[in-house]
Amino acid sequence: MIQQQESTIVEHHPMDVLLRQDRIPHIWCSGCGLGTSLTAFINAVRDCGIPLEKISVVSGIGCTGRVAGYLNLDSFHTTHGRALPFAVGLHLGNPSLKVIVFSGDGDLISIGGNHFIHTARKNMDITVICVNNFNYGMTGGQGAPTTPLGSRSTTTPYGNFEFPFNIPHLAAASGATYVARWTALDTRRLKNSMQEAILRRGFSVVEVISPCPTLFGRLNRLGTGLDMMKSYQENSVIRHGADPASVAMGKDGKIIVGKFVDIERPTYLDMMKQALGGRFNIPIPERSVDKTEIPMDGE
Ligand code: SF4
Image (cartoon, rainbow, N blue to C red; front, side):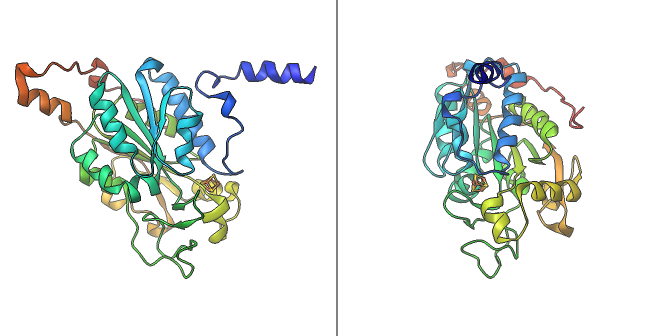
């Protein structure tokens, strides 16, 4: 009887359509922010109005890279750092697809860092969701190019003394046309921002600040995942339109979140069309020209 009740609940869960139930339970640790990040993403995909068969998700390696395997969409789990080149190939091979890269800071900004800046420079019509947990989680808590100054990791036992990347600044300076940052606690704003990024035309980036209590949290004595979420609540400040150069993590102990960049400029395919004129016969999807304003206040 209990089994029957449980099965009824699972079959009617609102995320059933987009989650591969046969891959559950997931591998993520208790208190990790990846669960709420994925939930926000699923809600954004469900509400964005693009047919599911026209959405493709690409991940690299790492804890965040597991997302591709849990989604009931056409999804690809690629090699470390190579999610973006794979996504570019997919986008250019079939521009009618909405290609979304969902991966971690180590994958996208370190090993795949060069791909990140050049895909932004070319303004490929691709959305990137970058979950930043300040370290390499899956491989054992090594320091990443996002590890804050002074923070401990397994490769910076005396505290990190390398300046970390400010991801929104890197994205904007490289050419991204939509840049936002939220924490894994801001689930509704994060969902709205992901939805807006998906509907924008060009290279759009949403950074998600997410707790990794098992490694980064433990090594830096930040407590449980809930403790880390509580610190997000106490320390994050919304500043829409802030100069991305001014939103580096750790400044005054604050986490500046919001939508920082939302501009239009021609995409790679627009430029190709302009250069080739009548010889260009690749259909660019209508979706890309929509500019829907979605409230960021979570209402
Ligand atoms: Fe999450 Fe860290 Fe565990 Fe990876 S190691 S699943 S990032 S808590």
